[in-house]
Every structure is written in structure tokens, then in C-alpha cells.
Image 1: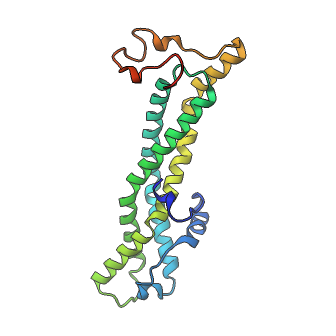
Image 2: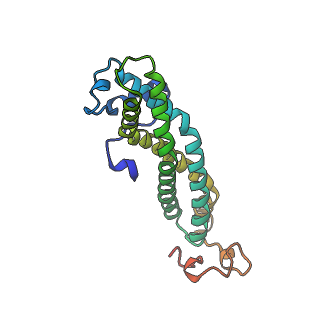
Image 3: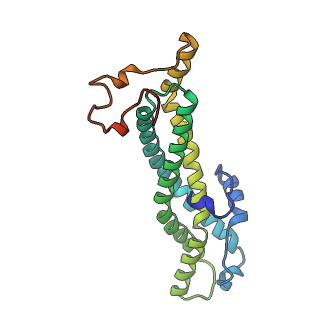
Length: 219
């Protein structure tokens, strides 16, 4: 999944101190930028810029990604597993789907805003530093630093989105999961939603056969 295939992941983001501590070992300054690599406090300033950028965009990105992923997963899993008696099967499918959707949405949504935000915060933090760079050189350096550390921020945002999506889908599917569990406990019979097969029910008869709920369970 995107950033997860690259560098080792830092742990999730908590308060400011723990976030910066999580990011610190992974921050990268290219040797091709000697003026910046040898600037006192450069690593600390880059870390601060990255932390500010993550905090600036993480909430809206996670909110949007999780909302879309959770609603989509709930609707599709409830349809495809309408006749599935196993609580575990339904939960596993929902977890796999919502994790994949939330991760992909978060990565697509955050990448460009995060890159721009890191460069902007770093530019502001470096304003008081004497770097001996022209404005063109500085902009090129800022772009390089933001790009080199982009995956680090994306991994943290992706993790926050997937963790929250897993919690939300469990809550969203609680009634359906409970119905399957109680059916076995109270009647000794596996769960079966006859309404899913009835004409005029929730799932239109016009659905292609491959997309209709099946009495034998999911396809």
C-alpha cells in the first residue's frame, strides 16, 4: 500500500512531542544539498515543518477518507453478505475492504497538499537563516526536501486513516454482526435474512445475477 512499501514506518501520531519523536529518526536531508545539510538546526527545522504540515492536513484528510471508505464498505458488505451466516466472515471482509479504501483515499488526498505545506512551513522557518542561496536555489532545495520526506508524512496520515476506519466499520456493522451472533445463540440456527431475497426488498431485482445476494452466502 503506497508508502507502506518503502521506508520503515514510524508509529502513530500523538501529541506534539510524541509526533516529533516518531518522525525524528526518519527525516532525510540529501547530501546533494550541502548548504542545508550543514546548516545548524536544519534537521530540527525540517522536522518542525513536517510536523506542522501533518497537523495542518491530517484531520480533514482522515475525516474525508474514513467517511467515504466506511459508507462504501458498509453498503457493499451488507449487500454481498446479506445471506452470510458467519459473523467472522463478514467482519473480516469489511476490515479488508475498509482498510484498503481508507488507505488509498488518504494517500491520494494528502500527497500534494502535504508537499506544498511542508515546503511552505520550511520556507517560513528558514527565513531568518543565512544560507547563501539565491531564491531559485532555495525554492529548488525546498522542493527537494519536501519530496524526500513526503512518504514519511503520508505513512502517518495513512495509518491514522486506516486505524480510524477499522474502528468506524466495526461500529457501523455492529447490528448486523450482532444479529448473526444472536441467531446461533438463541435459535441454534445460522443467520438468514429472507427479506434479502424477496421481491421489492432492499436490493432491486434489476441487479445483475452476479451482484445479487446468494442463499449460499457471498460469491
